[in-house]
Length: 268
Image 1: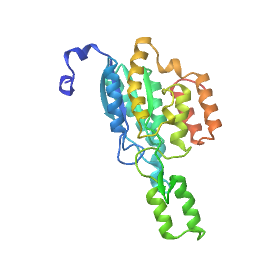
Image 2: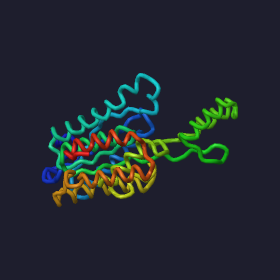
Image 3: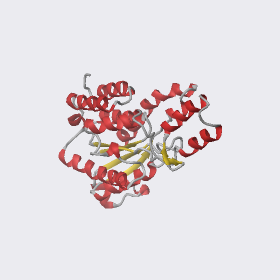
Image 4: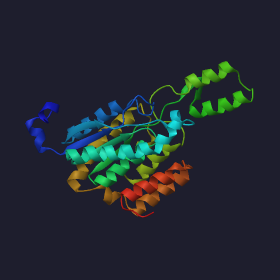
């Protein structure tokens, strides 16, 4: 069966690296992650492993907010964690790379890594680039402000629509210190991402290299016997908490860090 999905004779002697992709067209946060997963797979293969890409789900808090759909938001974190753990455990992967974009992806991926306790690296899908309107950069915050300005009769219907149609031009997570960027920063501070992973744009050469380097990093971790339990210590969680506070990050970090620590067997 493995030959049918691309294994050659020599591949059966290599560490098998699972690449958990949260690709989806549900949200711009994740619409490019299929390409990042391929980059991570190339990195793992080049470093001496054999990669296998698989998918899990995502939902968009930004789209579901204010509707009954938000009842599914936090539940999706557990679905992501359970599904990644299920695939990696069932297939006996030697290592894992997980790539997340939208809010619940980050803790979901890391919870799975903690439970599996196999050499793992988390890759943040990256933040969105700003759009431009009247020669000035605009982002999702610009839309929030424009809605308020419109309610105050400070801008017209057409101006509001123009800002809204230019603010989110392509792939990447919301351009603000909301849950996605907060948790990406926390996970990097925790030690489960490579340096600068949380600070790279979704569509950039730096993010492509981040994925490739993650493949090599997992192979090094396998050779060195480094597991998430060696990284996700109480001190590491305290470091992540410090970074969240310093950045003025999302208060959602509280419930996610507690869940991640619980999965890692760390009391917070």
